[in-house]
Image (cartoon, rainbow, N blue to C red; front, top):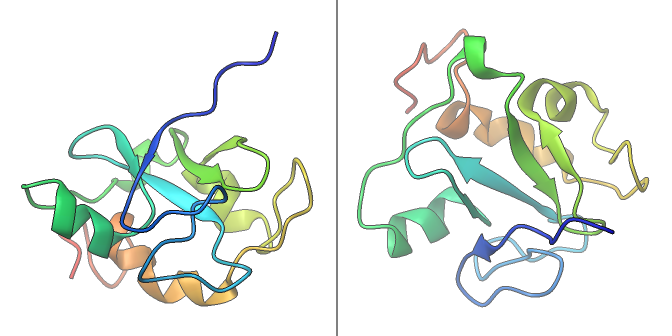
Length: 117
């Protein structure tokens, strides 16, 4: 029996996790926010709906399942997501390569440390 797909929070979500802020065909991931352990389509949806500040996943936590493919519902570790070449390893869906420009909002990077920007 398949596990139920995690719930994703966001504004104007479609079934593949696109939201009001990011809604191109390849905008099909959601991120589990460290601060509340809930999936959101993006940081802007979290800011609008959560009522608290975003927390950044530290490098030591990159093996946590915290990225959801909106196409197939597979949960990926942060590390797997960052190393997947913008393609879901489970279903082959393409992910938006521009998301790498936003990693620092969610994941500790060399530029941001653990605080984010």
